[in-house]
Image (cartoon, rainbow, N blue to C red; front, side, top):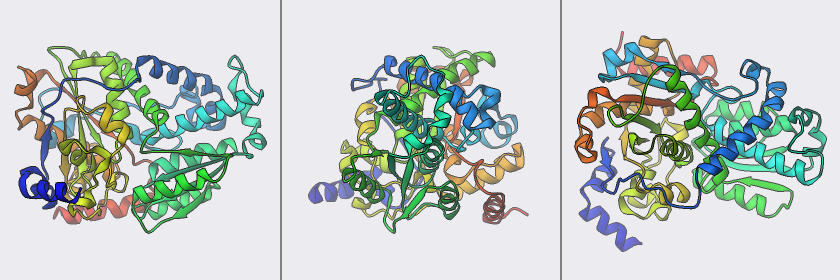
Length: 433
């Protein structure tokens, strides 16, 4: 591996730019919408049905979801001011506001909560305290049963929040291994919810490995593996089917003459990968998904560019894993996502922390909305793609009819004081009076 890495550093012009932390765009020359592996639309439909079964429980356990009858979903917003002043696209500019998802306030409320519910259902069915035809709200009174079992996970923050909050509510004993990048307020919130937070001075992959080791030694502990889990992946994929309905409600059609471009912040890759998988099931070749990563954590880009996927980390090429985008601070990409979506991902681009803070200020100023740093990476995508030759590569002749959708991955759980600090720093960084 060392010789191979030395050759990459010496001969690959893109890798040379990566190690200099230069924001860039990589277009996937293998792109053809192909999805590898055994997962299909059938598996996503199964996940949809499971979430519908749990809806009565969710509505009872989390009253903030009662208006949606226990369905955890976020709004689809049109951003007129951001479009005109800062993003400059001709078609619609939309925000999928997963920062407003109930319960845990981020995209991780999809995959993380889904996998906890799937595990809870399995245990309850196996022990005969639940039937598939039951009203699942009965599980609200089964905390004593679930307290016999534990859940462990490694996280930079938001996945830990989703799993910790839902797991603790059900009654599980939850252990969240937090990497060095995790924000203090996220750790504090988990502790308030009764979750045991195990802090590490090492990075995300090391925290995941420690969580995995802990679970291996305890037969009653279930490990949620952010690097490999198909259940997390399918929980994220459900979003695509709900997005289709929201687009229809806005009378936005997607097809040959009206392509959909989606910009997804990417850490280990499970969230954007699952959503990409779902979107390809729904829209096929008419949707184009781009992942966004920090210049200091381009894990998925590196894995795809080299073809080494999880076998190479950004640290291997000398990149310092240090970014304000804590949710994206991952050095090694998901094995599952890299291999399954190797051809279905249209491209990956990188952004600097400074650019994230600029977008934070613009979004607050123009739309009176707050997203945490990680969640702003999508806004840098449209300009990069429009200035590239991607449309020629895939045969799109009229980009003016394209719809651009930025996926907002987190922000509503950030305490107000922390929000003020972020916004003050963003304003100061941009030299804005």
